[in-house]
Length: 83
Image (cartoon, rainbow, N blue to C red; front, top):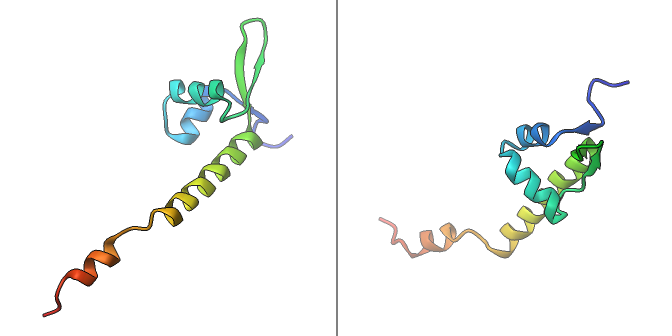
């Protein structure tokens, strides 16, 4: 067995994403981050590969956003007269 666990707690996911457990729970409840509920107390677990897939999707969404909303610095530089 490898050193990385297959399933992560919401606290583990929050640490990886550097966010709160409440935010991770919201991602799970919205269906943005696939997870399973286990045990009698219904504790949530996120498979490590699902987390990695989520991260890759967020990178793709960010790339699309940047492409669709170019940074306007180049345009504003063109308006500044050269000395």
